[in-house]
Length: 345
Ligand code: KG4
Ligand code: ZN
Image (cartoon, rainbow, N blue to C red):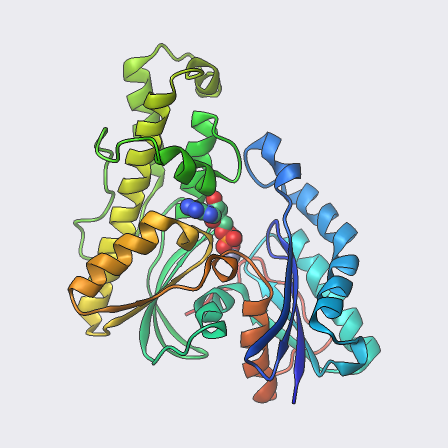
């Protein structure tokens, strides 16, 4: 029997989880920071670090309590060491090191992207190999996943990540933060084909993505209808224009989803791997979940998507990977430093 405590602080969520025997999630606690970052329309790194410092201790205690374990029951500490915001990572890594040192148990360093890829394993066993799409606020990466530790990066974004595009477009429209859920909500009353926004790189044969052009296309579209001196004025200009905003949101969401789905399916076809796993915060999006399943399954490709609580940032997914590394004896040691640009594949 083993118990792993995992700590995740790579961006704006403080998270702790306890995993038993590499399979059973005893607890998974997430401290959201939306209240702090909302007024800026995006994550402010310095504020994120400060909040991590304030809540990491009580949040970890809560995870242990909910999991019905004490510090003495733990066999290892797993921690996200990158990629992410350097100051935010530093809080989690320092906290995990202190626990590992004082409890005299191994410290395991986990790549955040690897956590997202394997989050599905908390709920379901996925045969390998598979095509893994990680779509979050910081990444849009397409992988060929052979096994734990064996990844080939097929493509990634050349500019903004998909989640970043959702956040920026929501800010332009004055819909609030985080942008993904706000756009999704707004889209419910909009027409997805009201405006045809570009589907960047979708016709190109490679697997790279590009989303920053969509933001520019949206600004141009708004300028073609309304007099706009400065982008920051748009939320005020669009006050009361609910149908217009909803149509833009729905058409944007459709464009992003179309690109993500078509590239992922074409990666599956090209590699002859008929299994797709999607994860990361954007994988909470209902249109993406439904379209990926419908289009892929029509071609005989299986699609696996974790439940939303394990798509967005959480520590249970870090514990799952941490447990595999712990079993293989791959420990980090107290010299571990966070790596903001830690790559995978
Ligand atoms: O994986 P995640 O929690 O954190 C990172 O590793 O970045 O992803 C956060 C991102 C944010 O950009 C957020 O707007 C987006 O995921 N997101 C969504 C939805 N829920 C969260 N995007 C689209 N639709 C959603 N329902
Ligand atoms: Zn993430």
